[in-house]
Length: 441
Image (tube, rainbow, N blue to C red; front, side, top):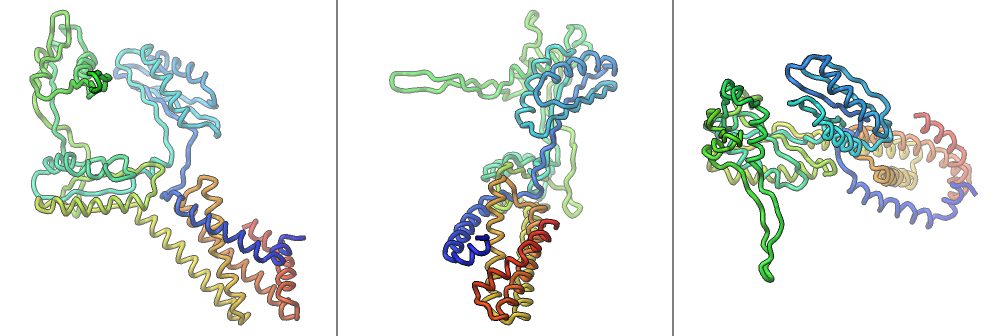
């Protein structure tokens, strides 16, 4: 018995089967991640070396060749391409397509950390890779508007607005842009530094060692009571910074060789709205979070923030949102589906003048889409601009195929055959042609 014959002779079984797939399709559709672009993982990692004052030959001899010897021992590496110039060098590592790139990146970072001691002093090594998730992670660009000094507005955004936005479920970070941040300037006397045979790297290492974030050390038990013990060594005033010991054998303090004062960081970016300076906020989401859901939660948080800070004349506005583009793509798919269904129903009813045939096509289109959502969820695909375009195209093809099949069934029905026989023979006659046309498309 053919598939068509089985479906026609077992209507209850066929109906229950597709009803179950449709219900699962609804569940799969609700769980599909929404992204602007599909996830494309490039099997490449880049390692860069920087050493001021080094020649291209020194970069190659003391860094690149040493690193290539270790990288060549890693699994999955297929091609290494390196380039060297004055002050910097670069290695591009290409992996096999089936390599787990997250694990490969961690493994490479571990190898480079081990080699750090073999590189010349003050060498900076950076390991990074690029994939399409970097493009879709930023979901929204906001701007903070308000009267007063722009630097004050940035500090206000850092202290009051940023924590509120990062508390939204699905938001990884809220990066503040524009203005100048307050900073502490440490201007070291180069002659004094040279006289004590010290470098800026020595000063930086001593500062980092003395300025530690809160660290959990363990617990102390007092009878039945357990007390958590942590260490906190962060600076809280300029005096403590000046007391940092740079050279213990003298001892030499940082205040002896440097001028320490309050200042501002150099402004590296500018944000404007309608020609007026503002502070920007870049919202990034978790890779697995739903784009539209996170955007709606952020919009709710923006309304709450604007209400809370209305008395201070602070306003948070949305200047760019990927969710709008995604919702537009979803609306396009819905419109394409509705237009396809409407045209198909109109054509069928115009030529066949039978409402039952029209209802069959009306059920086939959404059922087929729901089955497709099951396959997309099983293969870890997402709803994005490209997949939505494909679904819109598929709806049109499905409508065309449905019209061809239904018209052939109706032709057999007009010849006096029973509905079951007309459905079986009419479908079997055109099934190969429909499958071939759809497969080639």
